[in-house]
Every structure is written in structure tokens, then in C-alpha cells.
Length: 286
Image (cartoon, rainbow, N blue to C red; front, side, top):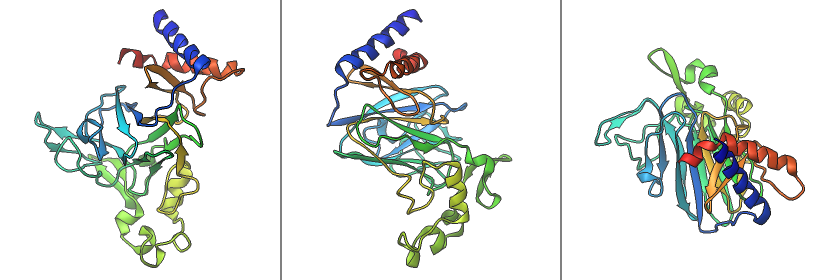
């Protein structure tokens, strides 16, 4: 344990002195399962993410590299059953009959959405409903690199008319558009603009529980974030305040709920970073 702490401190001091080199050609994605059960993340398009689907046991993390220009979604599938050939299905987030996703997950599914460019755009969306909490933390970037996500479990407060149940428990919460299929709830027809499409009783309930997530189609101002040259940690069943870590240019970088990194004259931030590195020690064994 001592050598891990010293190594983490060394890496953080290295970053403190010279800073981290920003890569303009790729983004590092660390996908973490902090749930108490195995999940099967799906990614579309998934060429850079092990073909678009894989299993993550509780506490497990996987690291991927996506090129600038990639635009896609990451979500969790739950209650899956796949055979040795990767054929099967899931209770929520299903993307067909394969472990590897070639399409977006079937609602309800909490979505982490990304567009990677010289200026990245990212968000967490509840427009397709909710199945698991997600947080998206941008590390090592520049700009409005706020933490996006929904760390509340909306299954526990899902209205009966939106609830998806299996074996007596709620496993997902559908969107009002998915349930009622009306122009008003789906922001289409005469409601297909931000003036006429306004928050509904259901989207307000989602927004109250998860203020850093999209709650309906035109919920842009408080829900979409931008960052330059960043890496991403997509964590399932995590608090948005929980420390997270990523590797960048062979350096371990950690951040707290503000995404802060050590900088000159801010020793208290360095202490937070060191504590985060210790908490993220699992990455040293990856």
C-alpha cells in the first residue's frame, strides 16, 4: 500500500511541476461500474469500445481510446443473459440480441452522449428514460468542464405509469414520450421548438432529482457541457462528488467533484488530489 501512495504522490507532483500534455487526436474513456451488480455497458458506435458491448463486474473499470470526430452514446444494460457466443438479451438498455451493440439501447436507458471535436460537447440524457445512475467527469481539459450526470436513483420514485417492473421491482423509468407518444411530450409537430415545447410534470420531476441532466428535448442551457482536450470518466451508480481517476500520457490524474487538479500555490487542491489518487488506487493494478 505504501508504494502505491508514493507512486500516486510522485505522479501528482509530476503533473504539478510540468502539467499534463493535452492530446488533440484522442480522448481517454474510463468506464467504471460502481453498482452492486454486474452491468453490460453498451456503446454506439462502438468500434473504439470493444465492438460496442462488454460486461463489467462490480468495482471493475475498463479504459478505451476514442478518436476526435467520434460522436456517440454510452449506457448501461442490466439483467442481461448472454451465452458463450455473445447471444442473449437484457431487461433494460437492450440493443438487440448480441453482447456487441450496433444500435442505441432500447428505452428506458440513461444515456451519456458525446461529440468529440476541437471543442467537445457532452451530456447525460433522461429523454429516453432512466435505468441506472450515471456521472460523466471531464479530467485534464480546459473550459466549462463541469460534471454531467444523474446520480439519483429515479427507479425508487418513478411514477407508476412510467415504471418498468420485473419480478416485483422497478428496473427502469420510461419517459412520458415513450409511454404516451404525444406531440406535447415528444416535442414534435407544433411542439417541435423550444418556445412551445416546455417542461412537463414528468420532466420537472426528473430535473428536480437530476439537475445536471437533460430532462426533455430542449433542456439545453443547464444540461450540455463543453471541454477542450479532456479525458472522460463514465461512472455508473456513482455520486457526482465521488473522486475519479484516469490515465493520460501514462500519468495518473484524479479529480474531485469540481474536477480540480493541482496547480501552483493551491496546496489544498494537491492534498485533495493525493487523497483521490489513494482512493483510486485500483487503477494502479489495472
